[in-house]
Image (cartoon, rainbow, N blue to C red):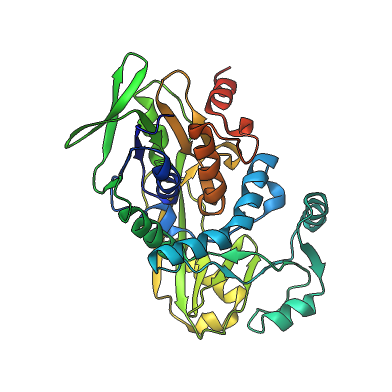
Length: 371
């Protein structure tokens, strides 16, 4: 790609922001458009565990991105902190999985992938997490799992981009469609008018599928609602992350505890519900009984970009010159962002890709879906 190129990025979540940060040093201009304020959808609403919840249940395509990102996150956090003074708080706490039905599969995966996950005596989990609820019988543990404070990650990425003279961030600028010259994508249409450039990158999360419909592309990315609650405890209340029965508790450095999350197919409705609140409170009390006496300080919902097998679409769409995708990360957008955006930049800039790009190629995956 020419160093004189103007890149338009549709979507200002972590994927869009980090894509812009990776491309900005190599092109003349980057314009990032978001329908709301940047980072206020799935990127803000998630828990920020820097691992898929059950990594052994995912395909090698997700695993490859996850491993690269997990190894890179501490560097990313430090670089952003140094550049902006805003700490994303990449917090390595470790994670205990409790009473898994597929523990044998998890341990076999860890051996095969050479990841530091192992079975431990349940007493070790109770020693490490004195607040843990009673009755758990088995545990596996990975010590190097971190979580990132995703709202701070968004703020840090935004600040880093604002400092770059060739990057423009246009918030509350909803993209309504594409500007075309035959099969060439020349830009996008917004309520304020057209924005023209050399390439358009679609990183619009749960809205990506809707936007591509106008081009006759059936991208199987749909919104999947997730609800979470937040508690405020003493800073040493929960020293590491715990997960049981599909629900997790995540400690922040200042004592905030996130408990999540639900998985709901409700279209684009992200209204928090009383039923989800009660379900999450029950899970919180089972994991950490002291929370039964606490009142959540916040309850919210977000929309994940659901996709088949949770594998993102990363790369060009050959049917439309100038159109690129970096979307469809489902529940793992924060986990996979560093690797996804580095791989994307490698493809755009013609560099040697960090991992094999074939499993994420839109042409291949959409072609298979249509055949």
